[in-house]
Amino acid sequence: MLIDTHCHLDAAEFDGDRDAVYERTRAAGVGILVVPAISAANFDPVLAACRRYPGCLPALGLHPMYIGEHRPEHLDVLRRAIEAEKPVAVGEIGLDFYVPELDPATQEFYFAEQLKIARDCGLPVLLHARRAVDAVLKGLRRARVKGGIAHAFSGSRHQAEEFIKLGFKLGFGGAFTYSRANRLKTLAAELPLESIVLETDAPDIPPAFLDARSRNSPEYLPRIAAELAAIRGIGVDEVARVTTRNAEELFGLGTA
Image (tube, rainbow, N blue to C red; front, side, top):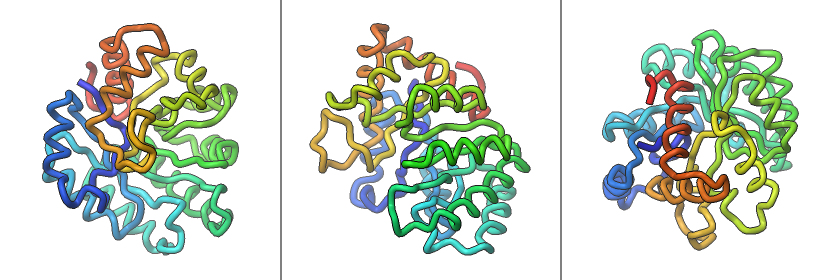
């Protein structure tokens, strides 16, 4: 069994064929999908999708790219939703310094407050860190949450090791499959497999075996696992076994 640790199955891109995508994903051997929210308005759609589809597990959080939608009172909404719905993680949260219109101070406020919520609730976090890895690490050192995943990791070897020291896993998906992604390929090959989890970020970040404009889908996770196995020179069964165990331990789902 494989676990997609980051998949936006609730996204509008799947509205036309969500049932079929889910069935193909399960048939491909992906048994669990973690579905992260991006805003308070998105909590209900995420929770509804997870109720409808067995094996889909919710994460609830306020994404840094949507700070225009967030309000301070949404932090209370988040805390109450966590208490009521028992998600497996707080996420997707973090910092995005790539988009100039996103005020860094506002992002850092919501990030710090959500880390406090995660710490108080004893939950791991799903991290968005685009052009902001060092700032995210700084926030984590202050908050000391119960681990989590550096989603779509694209940092340096040193930054990867800093995440690992803090008890985090590194999310690898479509980005490392591109021929030009030499640094990511090296990390995928050399980092401890015990620190890696698989993800698609569907419908985003399509892997190299799709057209760059194509919709990504969780059904492609086995092919991503096969690419990781080839890079590391090991069997895909070993990749599946270890990455699944890593995710299960992180989310408290038992042992593979």
